[in-house]
Image 1 (cartoon, each protein chain N blue to C red):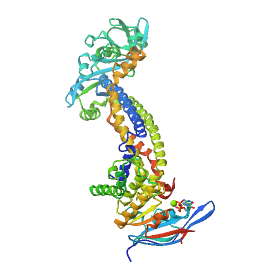
Image 2: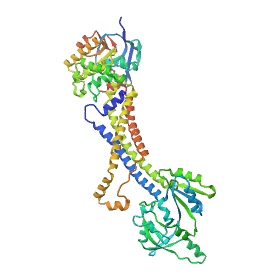
Image 3: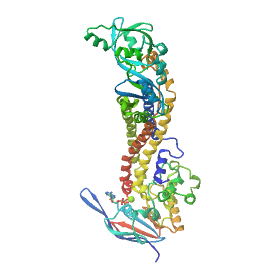
Image 4: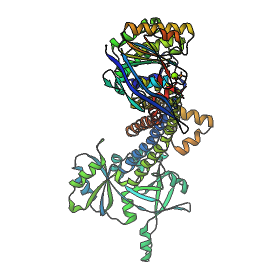
Amino acid sequence: MSEAIVTARGLTKSYLSGDRHIAVLRGIDLDIAAGESVSIRGESGSGKSTLLNLLAGLDSPDAGTLAWGDDPVAAARRAQFLGMVFQSFYLIPEIDALANVLMASRIVRAPGEAERARAKELLASVGLAERAKHLPAQLSGGERQRVALARALMNAPKLILADEPTGNLDEHTGDAVIELLLGLCASTHTTLVLVTHNATHAAKTGRQLFLRDGLFS
Amino acid sequence: MPWYLYLALKQLFPSGRKFPFFTAISILGVALGVAVLIISTSVMGGFGHQIRLMTVDTQGDVQVRADGFINNPDEVQAQLARIPGIVATTPYAQGMVGVLHNSKAQYPGIQGIDPARIGRVVPLQRYLTPAGALSDLDDDSVILSVQLAGLLGAQLGDKVEVYSPLLIEKLKNDSVLLPRELRVVGIFEFGHQALDSTVVLVTLRTMQDLYGLGGAVHGINVKLEPGLDADEAAARINAALPPALHLHAVSWMDINHDFLFVLQFERNMLFFLLTFIIIVAAFSVTSSLLISVVRKTREIGLLGALGGQPWQVAACFCCQGFIIGAAGTLVGLGLGFGVLAIRDDIVHLFTRLTGSEAAMLRFYQFSHLPSYPDPAYISATIVCSIVISTLAGLLPAWRAARLQPVEALRNE
Ligand SMILES: Nc1ncnc2c1ncn2[C@@H]1O[C@H](COP(=O)(O)OP(=O)(O)OP(=O)(O)O)[C@@H](O)[C@H]1O
Ligand SMILES: [Mg+2]
C-alpha cells in the first residue's frame, strides 16, 4: 500500500437554509493514496464543491476527521500540500501569465531564479511558453485555464483538487485541458481529485466516485 | 518583496497597461492636498519670517532693562561691551506724547534714540523709504511713522508741536511750559500694521527733556553676533551683569511672546484646516478601494485558497493606501515647490488679470510674495498625508480580510 494523501472519516456538513438544516454531506469516508486519480460526479447541488472545500481545508466539517498525509489539516500547510483549479480561472488580471503562475510560490516565499525557471517550464508544459508575457485578458478561456493549471502545480503539491475545470470551456477545449491535467499529474506523480459532470472525463481517472444524498454510492 | 506589497503595486500600476484612472485620480487628490499645504504654510511662514526680521530690525536681539530707569547708561553699555557675542548697544527711552499739526492732534508712542549708535543695532535708515534721512535727526527734529504722518497731514520739513505729560505736571504747579516745536526730518515705514502703528522717533536728549529724565534711559537695545540664539544670549547677559545693578536682559522672542504665539497659532490652525483636503482625498481613496475589494472578491478568495493569510490580504489593501499616500506626497511636494518657485509670476498674472496690481502693492506692501518653507511643517505635511492615506486603506483592508475564501469563491 502506497503513502496516504487524504484520509477522511465520517465527514458531515450541513447548511442552515431559513430555519431548516440541509445535510449536504452525511458521513463521507475517503482514502486517497499517492499518485491516484479520483473523479467525483453527482447532481448539481449534491455537495461536490462542498466536499472539495473540506478536502482543501478551506472549510471545516461539522463532524468527522480529515488528514493530509499523516498529519491533520492545517491552513499553514495548504500552499505547499495542494493546488486548486476552479471552474472560473481566477487569474489576477493586473499581472501577466508568468506572474500569475509565480503568484502561488510568492505567497509561500519570495521567488528566486529557480522558481522563475520552474514557472516558465510549467507554462511551456501547458503549451503557453510564447504567452508568458500576456495578460489574462489577452488569453482565451482554454489558455487561461491552462495558466491556472500551471499555477496549481507551481509549488509541486502532492494533491490537485479540480472543481469542474472544464465547466466554462467548450467541449473540444475542455477535452484538451483534461488530457493535459491527467498527463501532468501522472508525469509528476501528483494525486488528483477531479469533480466533473462529464462521464468521458471521469472514465479517464483511476477511480470513479458518485456522490448522492450526501454519501458515495 | 512580500507578495501583498507586490500585488498592491501591481493593482495600482498593472504591467503592460496604461496608467489606471483610479490610481491617477487618487494620487492627484492627495497631491493637491499636499501642494496646498506646502504652498500656504510656506507663504504664511514667509510673512511670519519677514515680521520676525522686522521685529529684530526695530528692537534689536536683546533688550536690557532696569526695574525703573537705567541712570548710568554709559556705564552699563561699557559693561555690556565686555560680554562676548555682543556687537553693539544703543540706549532708548520711551513714552507717550501728544502731537499737534495743523490743529490735528494724535497721541503716538515716542522713542528716544541715539542717532550715533542706533545704526549699528537696528538698520533704521532702511525703513526711511517714504522720506528723509536718519543723519538729519537732531535735538530739534522728529521722525514720524507713515501712518501718523498721514493722520496729521505732516510732510517733510513741516513743524509739529509735541506735548509731553510733564506739561500737565507743570500746569498743576501753576507754571506754564510751552510745547516743543520739532521739524519733521523723516518718515519711516516698516510695512506691517503691528509694527507700524503710530510712533515718533526723537533723539534721546529730546526725549529725556520732554520727560524730565535727566540722563536716565528705559533700556538698552543689544545687537548680537549673527547666528547667536537670543534666548541663550539673554541668559548669558543676565549671568554676566552684576546683580547690584538690578538689570535684566530679555530676548526679542520673550518681549514679543504673545505676538509670536498668535503668528504660530494662525499657522497651526491653517495647517489643521488644510489637512482636511487630504482627509477628503483619503475618503475617495477609501471608497475606491472598497469598490475594488467588492470587484475582486473572487480573487481575494483565490489568494486565500493559495495560502494567503487574512492579515496579508489586509496588508495588500493597506499598502495600496500607503503607496497612494507616498506617491501623492511626492507629486504634491513637486507641485507645491514648483508653484512656490513661480509664485511671483502667478501673483503678477493674477493681479494683471484682475487689474489689482496697484491695490496689491498698496495694501499688502509686497511686490514679491515671501516664502519660507519650514522643515517642521514640511515633515508634518509628509507624515500626515502618508498616515492619513494609509488609514484610508484600513476599512477596505478589514473588509477584505473578513472574506472567507469559500464564500468569496462561491461569489459568482
Ligand atoms: N454557504 C452556503 N449556505 C447555504 N447553503 C449552501 C452553502 N454552500 C452550499 N450550500 C448548499 O449546499 C448544497 C451543495 O452545494 P455544492 O456547491 O457543494 O454543490 P455541487 O455539487 O458543487 O453543485 P454544482 O454541480 O452545481 O457545482 C447546495 O444545495 C447548496 O445550496
Ligand atoms: Mg460545485
